[in-house]
Length: 344
Ligand code: SF4
Figure 1 (cartoon, protein in one colour):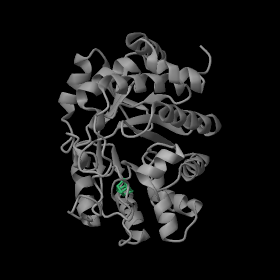
Figure 2 (cartoon, rainbow, N blue to C red):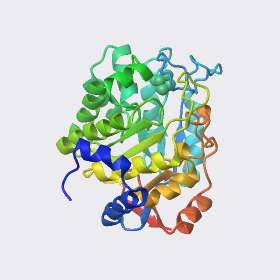
Figure 3 (cartoon, helix red, strand yellow):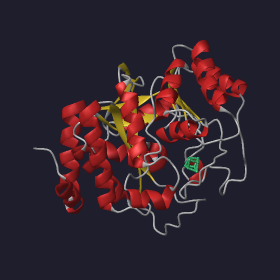
Figure 4 (tube, rainbow, N blue to C red):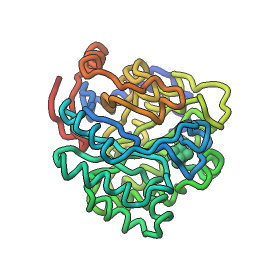
């Protein structure tokens, strides 16, 4: 099968549901067999104070969440100490855009973690945060990216991508990093020999064609740099925010989107069903629609749970592994760069 163009990808939304799943599953099998990857990780969201005003956000303290917090570095180090004892291999650190802390506060989190726990992979700062820090502190993207590396950041998460279509983006998160800026930052990161992920927030006001356009733009940069490890479609959470979406996206539409992204993104090796936003059950089904990664145990999560996701306390490792096995797949623990660590 040749490369799928925009029109063909759009038509796949009207294809037979199970045929579409089979096609995506065939690609998944070719790439990964029955393996489903996960990692033992912990998400840390150090502050929810935000200068930006994304309509879909329930997390930012300046919107509907009145409970501001900013963690101290000692608090963060204590969390890392605990998760290190439990065998976590990665910390995933993303925050709101807090203008009150200073650039050093952001960077020293990484430096202190790396000094005390050099074996833990630090995945941190979305392109939206990089853009915020660059503008707030009069630095270039190059300077911020170099400072991240100097202070111990190993890879970048894929957040802040939302939907790349400028019109939709302007409506849901005006003022935040633009699509072009998002890609510029990831291109520069990849040029430094570093890896990142890329997300897509869907199920709100966007249309199917916006999702396909989003995937096409990712495919184009990946052709140039090869720096994306994983594509992560994130299902929009409906509660506590300013996007008044009346109807939730259906499971059928979510699974179709997974399958189509597996087929369109022929150059991105991994497709993640982030169970935090899709529910665990649907993430397990997504394994049959192209997904080969279920993220990890997470342990604690604040951003999506603020908008209604049932993810606040993560999931126990034994339960997680058992669910993957029971659904007919092979749980494989990976590190942050997709090296296999253990077949469970
Ligand atoms: S999504 Fe991020 S940048 Fe936007 S308001 Fe929420 S915390 Fe701020």
